[in-house]
Amino acid sequence: MKREKYVVVLAAGKGQRMESLNEDYSKVAYPILGKPLVNYVLEAAKPLKAKETIVVVGFGGKMTEKCVSRVAKVVWQKKVQGTGDALIKGTAPIKKVKGDVIVLCGDTPLLTTETIECVYKKHVKNENKITICSTVLANPTGYGRVIRERPSYRVKEVRPYAELNEEEKEITEVNSGIYVIDNELLQKYLPKLSKDNAKNEYYLSDLVGMFFNDGHKVDAYVLEDAEDIYNINDRIQLAYASKVMRKRVNHRLMLSGVSIEDPDSTFISPDVEIGKDTVILPNTTILRNSVIGPKNVIGPSVTLEHVLVGEDNVISYSVITDYKIGDHEIIGPYVQLKGGRYNVDN
Image 1 (spheres, helix red, strand yellow):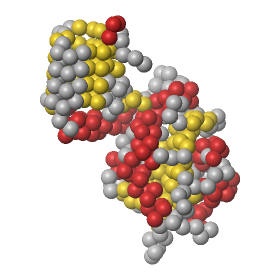
Image 2 (cartoon, one colour; image 1 turned 90 degrees about the vertical axis):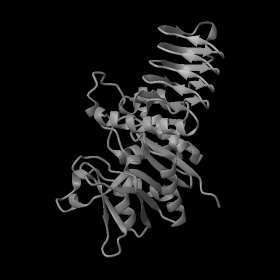
Image 3 (cartoon, rainbow, N blue to C red; image 1 turned 45 degrees about the vertical axis):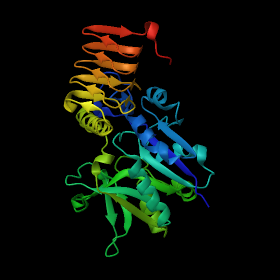
Image 4 (cartoon, one colour; image 1 turned 30 degrees about the vertical axis):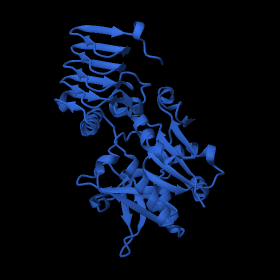
């Protein structure tokens, strides 16, 4: 019998280290290549075809809600009391359903569908009640650790970083924040979470030890490439993730038949489509669902946002927004276009 899947994305955190002058700026709304962080996570989860996708918002929630409301149900964590409390709020709409809850973090834009599917498949295949995604880091500072039973090597606990003793800090297997949990058991154990800890918060990770101690099957999928679960806490990390995403997008396009003369100076959103034999010259940025046909030459120094481009055009030294361009046109240099008779339908 098919088990239903439900996705809950935790996106209520403050992101204080982003150091924004706007106190209401949601961390997960910061963009990479024109797309908010949380939307990358939702895109990665979309192919799983979950019965329902829920995003928990809190700090800067109105901004986050604007980012996600078209593709997910939004629930509020009015008072931020930890990840455990966020999951209580997030699963309230599905409290009585059977199936598995896939818990994701809204600040992990490099997360891939493949990683989520691997965790979920192991959960189902091994008939686990809770499955975490872990990885091994050379420098695990700041991460919660996966505690394993000896000598069986079974996962018995996930210990938050603030609760670690000196010996446990030497452990290099860390928790990614990705979980798959049997919802019936989840609803049974969520009310048992306690704030009796260093941060006076409800820790979602405490569920692992609670399940293990009561004899429920606990397991981990150990991710080889830690880049997938890289989370954003400051603008240095935001820039690093942007660089990784830009490389992924450019490589995909080049393998599909697009020439990119200087990938290091080319910024293309992952939702952009570009036809074969189009050449992208240096210092070019293409964002917001733009669609570029075949055999174009775009650049150098071009910015396109929400633009439709036909085929066999030459566009140089131009800024074009919300526009439609036909075929066999020469645009630029030093042109700025927005809307007008070629306005793109919204």
